[in-house]
Figure 1 (cartoon, rainbow over the protein chains, first blue to last red):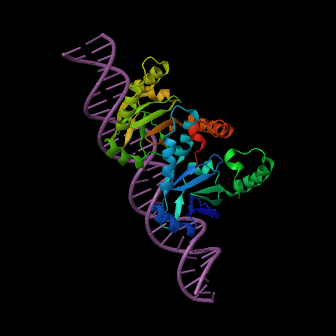
Figure 2 (figure 1 turned 135 degrees about the horizontal axis):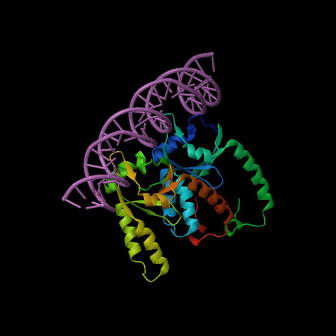
Figure 3 (figure 1 turned 60 degrees about the horizontal axis):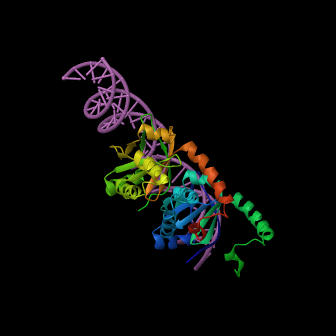
Length: 152
Length: 152
DNA sequence: CCACAATTCCCCACTTTCCCCCACATATTG
DNA sequence: CAATATGTGGGGGAAAGTGGGGAATTGTGG
């Protein structure tokens, strides 16, 4: 049961966005509509069903506290993780701070990414997409091991 | 039952800060509102429910006394640990010395970090955050083993 | 032991934010 | 084209956050 596909979405003046109808039923039965949003290093937001998030959070919390990289990740990811519930109309309210982080304006894009969803500002999304296509073509020689034998 | 998420909080002239409503009930039932504050090496404050703190304290006390790093950690953490209780309005009073250590002014940020909460001066938090986002992207090649195969 | 100062705590009042509900606009389906 | 479902916007009440006055407590110095 994975999320996939892309949706155009409006963010209203109060910071709310409507979850696409085709996800709602799934979200209600898989986690009672209980979601967690957090930030991503690429300046978009990540949305997890609560149970999925808890697995990740557990891993993060167990990281060594004296390691700088670990603390950094913990603060970014757990620090920004916010519990959300859908309202009566199937919408979620994105906290102002997270909207700012992702540069969200009126038009946003919601992208299914397996266990999670990503929320991008539309403009940022379009720009990044162009960069990636260029980057993938340029960097072909320099892949980590796990990508070397990936077959699409 | 972990703490997560971020809150903007005002510290008033008396050094008080209001615990966000969504944490209060949990704090009351899990530890009767009994908290411990101490300092962190990154110049923020750490807040633990008393039972959680006692576990940490036990670990710290057991560290080898002849190791310089150990003594340093013990003095920093145990030395600054202060018992707190929420008042009738769900606020805690931060001791002046700890406020100074963290450079707390009027605007602060409260961050859930699993078993503990962190309190940052807003300005410090914003600055550090920018540095981290940059650092995460720059240092991708140099991660500790436990982070190598982390999948978000 | 007393007086004074500083700090802490409790209470009240104000401001802001959030959340529930209703209403309309747009899209989809029969 | 009607009828239903989905997306979008906003008003108003409730709750949370914020600030300050004054009483009670603690601590200090005489």
